[in-house]
Structures are given as structure tokens and as C-alpha cells.
Image (cartoon, rainbow, N blue to C red; front, top):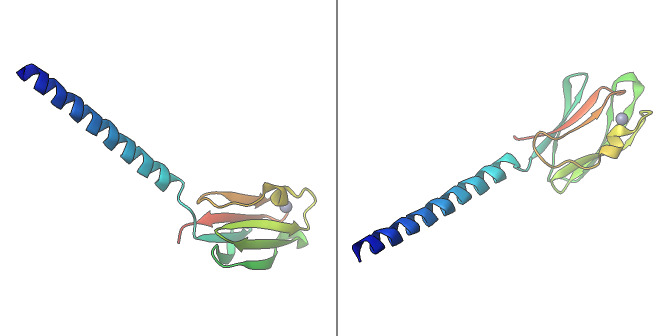
Length: 117
Ligand SMILES: [Zn+2]
């Protein structure tokens, strides 16, 4: 009778442990994919613009080699709408929302990166 009680207690503890591990894992996952608040626009390594991702804005940025990029941000994301570069890799990259994500335009030496404040 007594050993059965201990067994139930152990199973209960094991369940609690599994749930705790799951909760911690979920928290780590959420922290790891934290939504960014701002986007930094860098041209040749210099930050030329910082955008608030909650504000709907459309800005033209002068990149290197006389290439201009139209950067649109809002609703927690940012993307390059138009660019004068030949490859348009930056335009095709689409919208970025996660901290650490970046849009790189090599011909214009421009980088748009989602950052935390
Ligand atoms: Zn480009």
C-alpha cells in the first residue's frame, strides 16, 4: 500500500517536471524569435536611418554607387519595395520581422537589419 503511494507521488513529480521543462522550452523559443522593434539601415557600414517598425513609413535611401532604395516599414516588419540595383535580390527578399533578420543589397552596399531597441 505504501509503495503504491510513493509510486504515484513519483509519477506526479515526473509529470510536473515534464511540464516545467516544456514551459521553459516554450519561453526560450519565444525569446529566441522575439519580434523586433526597430530596423537599422546601414550604407557602407554606417547607420543612416533607424525605423520604428510600428510606424507606417516609406523612405528613400541613397545607397552606394548612386543606387536608391525605397524602404517600407510598418506593422512590425520592413521590406525593400523598389531598388535601382541590377539584381533586385533585396526586393525579392521580402518582408523581415525577426531580430537579426536582414536584407542585403550588395550593389548599393546597403543592409536593413531588424534590431532590438
Ligand atoms: Zn538590391
